[in-house]
Image 1 (cartoon, rainbow, N blue to C red):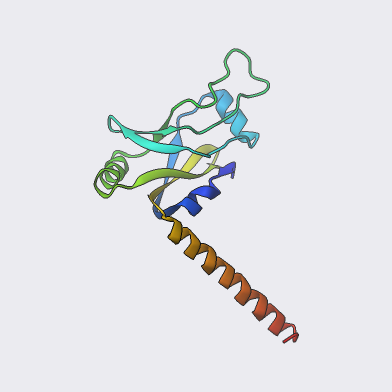
Image 2: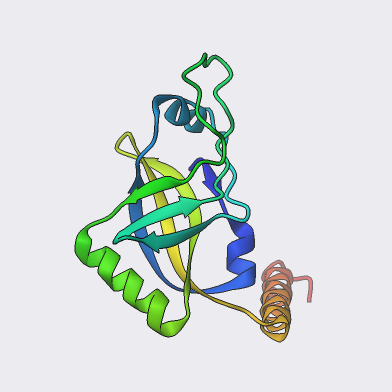
Length: 150
């Protein structure tokens, strides 16, 4: 895995995920292989029957020359036509958004995991934090009980 968007799972409820390829230049791939990328504030958008990834930051390759890429350029995502139509319909009708969750390499190809997401409200975020804290406390109690401390 090259980069993950941990804040997306906090800010959004992820309803569905899709794996997509990315159309990249050579220096972008080399920079990704070095483990340098940021998905903060990144989002995907449908335009003319294609899906594009906006605001993903891949820093310039340090050994690159004049062939270096622009760090925040718009990148085309590679999906089958049926998947694009399905995602476009859900985004248009249900008011959902497409958020990149992680970037990784699969069989040598750069992939991005897109999440179909709905924004959370503040009280939803507080409920999730409360559930996580309760689960941690239960695990601690079970651990102490298993060791004979309680």
